[in-house]
Length: 109
Image (cartoon, rainbow, N blue to C red; front, top):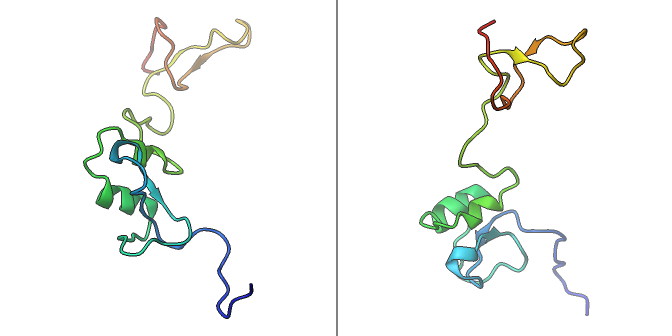
């Protein structure tokens, strides 16, 4: 039946810990309705840091839209150049694209 206070569509504007899932497999959600007594956070990452800081599986952080990695990739090209073997010899040169292919000689310029 219709109500006097309509429910908004989509997720909540806050995130809360998913206590219905085991700690090692849980993350933060913004699903309606907000369970009574749950702590809320302004962002998903704030929730992961607050509610799952000791989570060794990293599940909560892995559910972020842009999750952190164990080995972050630097922006831009490498500090060295290497031969571009993928391009024909008459048109090739040296490039500094990531990742550096294994066994490729490198040059400072």
